[in-house]
Length: 284
Image (cartoon, rainbow, N blue to C red; front, side):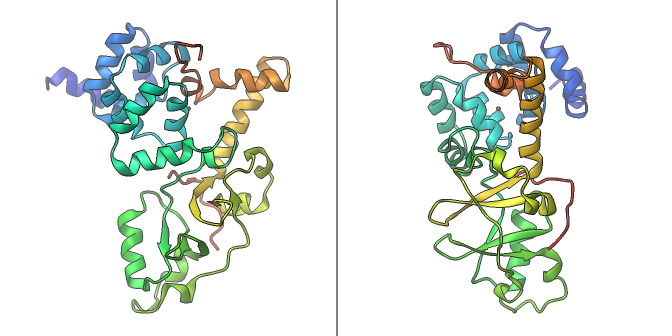
């Protein structure tokens, strides 16, 4: 890699918004080549900030492998939005190019209709088996939790959500003590098929910033953050203002505005966007 390319990628890593504006001045094929040549993490940071029309054409110009590498760096619910708007053959080809864990997470999110909690959840949000001791749980949290959180969920070996653990409660405990000894019962959980709008006023969401998501049978699927839900609600409200307040039109126009504008605007030839909130919130 030349020094000029190094400088360009450093600029894009530190200033993804400005890099996106520069890419928008290029032909889609040229912008796609830049994304392909850049490290996937850098390419994803920039791709999420492209404007709708150039972004749509740029992502269409990517090969399934390049698109898969970039979407694997997206939060699952945003990657799923992109994939929903690709032709089925392209969607399947991109999924097949992904690492197994990323592909399974995206396939799980894609299983649920848009507008539901399941379509907006983070399927990688950490849950611990209930037969671990505190020492094992602490190591698992350090290894597998990408984002800071105040607590993690606990599941049994049948994947049934059993409770929640405050990270604070693990501190100073004997390492051989069962993790269930500090587990608390859950008073809150969401069905994956719940309409996300009905959750916005949930006091538990406002208190903890994240809620667990389960199947109808109670199997743990992931978690949804307040940040994700309120961002989407804000976009819908903005779309409503731009279209004169019509609720139906707002939903139709949602996909061309805001941070997710690019992701929601990808269309097929027929005409047709686990992470935790960084707001903190109150620990348990």
